[in-house]
Amino acid sequence: MFKMRDVLIGVICLFLALPAYFLPAAEENETTSGTASSMLEALTADIGNIIENGAAMGSGDAELIIERISKNWEAFTDKYDRDPWHQGIEIDSIKNAAGKILAQAKTDLEKKGVGGAAETYAGALPLLKTLVLEFNMPILADFTGAQCKICKIMKARLAKIDEEYKDRVRIVMVNVNTQKELTRQYQIMLIPTLVFIDRGGNEVSRNVGEMEEMAVKTKLDELLGK
Image (tube, rainbow, N blue to C red; front, side, top):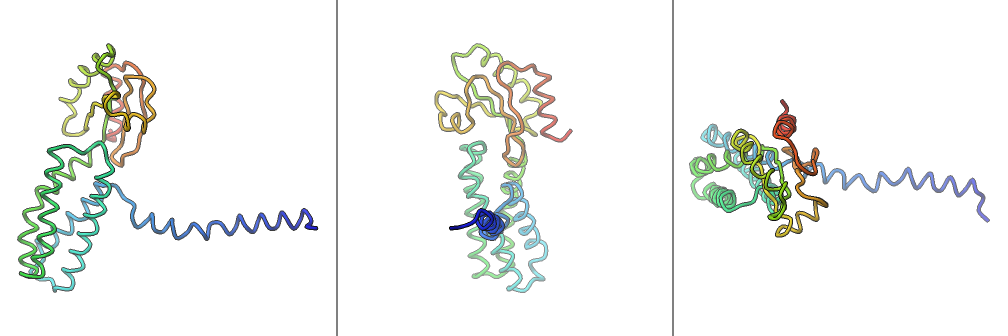
């Protein structure tokens, strides 16, 4: 029969061995981590490099940079497809137009060389800069309903706040009756509920019920790092 000491030694050895099994996953997460805005900023910087220095680059160096641009774009679009806050008709059209230009630039590298790719990339820069601004903004999500009196008060209050913060914070109205998946995801039990989300997509805080204008602004300023 096993002695208690042998059992304890076995448990300790198993515990010490566990990190080794999880190391590969941690490394994989590290390579694919990053916010949508950081991915956009990285590929925008690479595109600027191609445009500015493309003529002096060898084809091999340009190919490496363009391949990195493609990987960052794929990672960004993957995050975008799973991001409920920034999707919308206008922003979708900007993303799709930028994607087409990036794909064309990769083709132009093979047909026209680095100079041809650089010219094509120049058309994508304004679109990408718009996306960077969009994804660099923190979010205030107002989970609301049509028949809720306090919700109507908060809607008017937030509309006024939005005029002051519209270029720095994205304020989104979420109807709990029609956007049930998002409501379930954020475990909304009562309305109105205001959820404050940072630039990385992480919930920082929330408030249930009515919230005074100055209190909302204070929270938004904290999100903006003031």
